[in-house]
Image: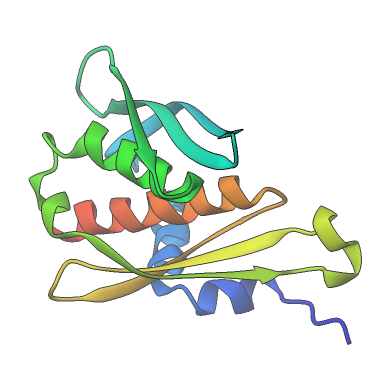
Length: 159
């Protein structure tokens, strides 16, 4: 049995991303940061895997962005750690941000590994919990989209 999902159904499960779809359409909207580069590396040597993400993030209103790199338990964790490292000095509210859930849905099971993937992330700042979604044919790109939405949601809700 193949189950397909509409974009609207997926965004209904991710209220923060749904809210951002509307906010981003507003004239003059400027996100608090832009991802200029992201490299994710997985290496396996002698049966041991390592995950590293290198990132270049431009914070709105600031000068030339530095590169930041972090390792993680997995590739998504490495991306999360690099993003937090790049933004934590500018956005101190990130100290309270935590991921509390991570779920994937294969959107076109009949396409197997060529299917688009929806990645849902649940996060909290200790007071509120929200869900975001990223959708892509690449699980890391979908994870990145959900991760960026989650952090951007926190930054904007605290302004």
